[in-house]
Length: 333
Ligand code: 1CP
Figure 1 (cartoon, rainbow, N blue to C red):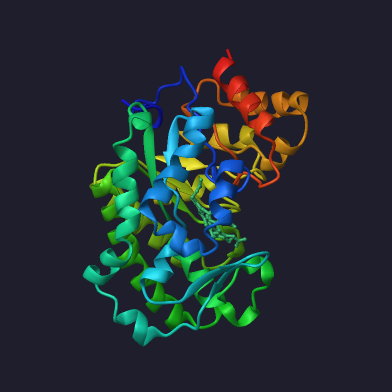
Figure 2 (figure 1 turned 90 degrees about the vertical axis):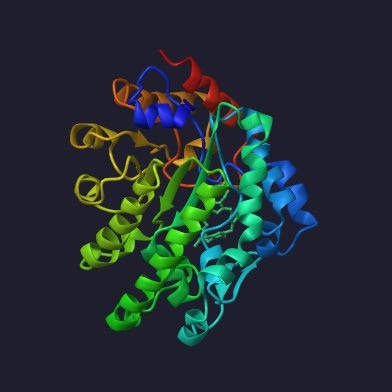
């Protein structure tokens, strides 16, 4: 059985598999080289050969235990007919929300539009480098996708208060998003993804409506993935109560963010855990890195634990420290 599956399904505590969120990305010179001549990010995600090549870059360089397909959570709004662009120095910019246009999406045109993503998964899963490794497919959670669709840009750039008021629109959109997220997950699994991760990067924005906008729609997706027989990892970044999230949503594994105390997590959570380390630690020194990494490894010594970060790896990260990180994790006793 592959490393991540073994950790999650067999609750193996003898090894800590390792992969990093955003491991295929801007900190890698070989990625930046491809990106230079491929300015249109969506087009790059829809180039199956380049997407597969980028997915394999961190495996070739570091030998991580899993690859995550090079794509983006915002391929979903794109595929349901909302314009999505990525602007240098600004991030994602989405077009006006047009419910009529969105409702024109059907299963066939959705799958056709994202077919290169599925081809990239299929190509990658057949590569010899993935023989004993997992290939992680992913989606954004319904809430996080909704945030980008309504706000039309990252909440980092601002999020008006009125955002949360139109509950009719929000519920309507969440239903549509859920339908197509399920299809996107099914297509990724059919193409060869053997683990699914659900990124809820903006879970921390909510206080009151967590049951309606996070628990319920995410539970629906988690149950769907389980029915397809594939382990599902949830990452509700910034959520205050991970214990409650796990009790209600019941993912197969939970990725924690770097704000939460791992000692609290080990006391409260019984399912396999992933992640936690602050990505900024990878900008410091080898000594500090060892100290921080060993904190997580020691805390989760007798618990199924997949080493990862508490958010995506930063573009300024030095390659040497990533190598050192893998060494520390692999040689920890
Ligand atoms: O060169 C560039 O500028 C592109 C940077 C980049 C990359 C490498 C973006 C733009 N997306 C990706 C790939 C990506 N995104 C992957 C696959 C590669 C890997 O993980 O190794 C994954 C899993 C994602 C997921 C993703 N995209 C999330 C969830 C995780 C997280 O970071 O919270 C989110 C929120 C996005 C949206 C997104 N994509 C890119 C940007 C700049 C953003 C906006 C982030 C924000 O709101 O600040």
